[in-house]
Amino acid sequence: MARLQGKVAIVTGAASGIGRASAILFAQEGASVVIADRSSDVGATAETIRAAGGRVVAVEADAGDEAAVASLVERAIKEFGGLDITYANAGIVGPHVPFLELSGADWQDVLRINLVGPFLAIKYSAKAFLAASRPGSIICTASVAGIRSGAGPTPYSASKAGVINLVQTTANQLAGTGIRVNAICPGLIETGMTKPVFDGARARGKEAKLGQLNPLRRYGVPTEIAGAALFLASDDSSYVNGQAIVVDGGLSSSHPVVPGRID
Ligand SMILES: NC(=O)c1ccc[n+]([C@@H]2O[C@H](COP(=O)([O-])OP(=O)(O)OC[C@H]3O[C@@H](n4cnc5c(N)ncnc54)[C@H](O)[C@@H]3O)[C@@H](O)[C@H]2O)c1
Image (cartoon, rainbow, N blue to C red; front, side):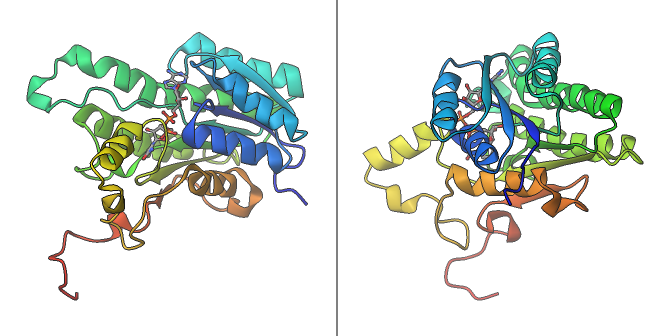
């Protein structure tokens, strides 16, 4: 049987990349999905889902806006009769600038979308789960950039570290409710966000260098993160809670090493 049969899921950032792949996979696995993005391309994701026989509502919405997130949850309940899964995935990378050159204002949008957004998604989803006595699953996209330095600009990395902590604190404040809150920390995945990196490497004839820092020696694709999201959304992960699961080809499993040395 499909792993999300009869479930209702919200996925944010579903116009592109990881969110798009996850929304399509959740629908393939039987979920009715409310997909949101600030880009109108979210309609194309909905078309793909509908064409495959899935049940979907597409909403153009800002995942960092409180009223918009509250109304996404209401929409799921109104359209599909409830809510079981929320995947707070929308994010931006923000300015690629050394921190000495950033102002406080430069941080605001990154934190608002990448950290306040997941907080709002957890808050309104948990309220809906509690009101309906449903043991829901909430998933947030963090990043390997949130574990340590070296995978993104300063505000981006700090926002993702915040998401890792957010799933811990909220999972614990929801103790005794059956609601699970987890995060995924992707490594380098080819998406809209990383397009400049991939385009730049290809333009310089350096595509073979992409993803070489992890022991799988390749970059990832959105369906590989969607698979982890499906695991966390489904009952397969019924005892996984308050965790940040790293899906990075092993990138974060090692200290830097001198090439050729065996340790
Ligand atoms: N691609 C990677 O290598 C990588 C690695 C680690 C983490 N991530 C995270 O994965 C998540 C998905 O990103 P992606 O890589 O698929 O990039 P992407 O750019 O392909 O997709 C992100 C989507 O989020 C949407 N979005 C941005 N701000 C929004 C807002 N305020 N409201 C609604 N939608 C908004 C964008 O329009 C876009 O469709 C992000 O949280 C990102 O930080 C990506």
